[in-house]
Image (cartoon, rainbow, N blue to C red):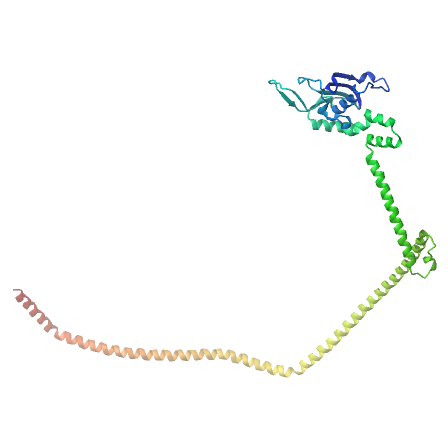
Length: 383
């Protein structure tokens, strides 16, 4: 980043001051000098405030940078123009401040504002007026935070004076605070502590190995020699273990081969046993077949009896039909006799009816005679 122009209005001791850095472009180095309190650090504060919204070293709040000589009609703001990767950027920022109200005679609180102007890839002019967006844009552009910018780009005056007059240990402390290397110091201390812990763990492991060396039970005396260095002892022990593993592998191979042979013999035995069982079953079946053959005459006799029973069963149905027909004949015969009796009774009643009819026919003239007399008697009674 290369500064081009810085304008400070009512910022610190400056009412309206512009620093034109372009006048120093041809110089390899230039110096900002002056007496204490003349505003040298304020220039760096203004640059840092314009970029990040806070002062260098963050020792003073941005609102505190408003000039004590500014009236409530004057605004505090900083404009910083700079170049980065051959592109020009202009950022104007004002802190939160109390100014005269536009209406009436009172005062009002004006919120912090920002305006970042630049040209995009196509050359079109762009402006960012959101504080969060502007802060993120600057951070991405410079790849620095405000704290990193203060430590790398700006060297604070007070800490530089302390650095020149301090001894070696104090200089180390000042440089650590100045460049924020506390993290690396903590990292070194952590490595030292871990190294110390590892040395203690290694010592403990060596003691444990010596105890194992004392208690190891092997046939070779060199493996229990306590005067041998531990690495040599471990190497010799590793070779012995390698031999033992090879021997174990050999035994395992022989065991697997024997196990496979045993499996084959087991299968052969099972096959022979199954064949023997089948032969025993065949002999048993043959014995049962011979017994059934001896019982064949009995089976034939039972077959004849069965056929006779089946014929009797069929004849039983025919006998039942015959019995039912006989019963029906008896019932019809009884019914016929009953009907005959009823017919005789009816014939008697018919004969009596004929006699009565003949008698009525004979007395009919008398009845007519009596009816005429009755009619005449009725006429007389009426008179």
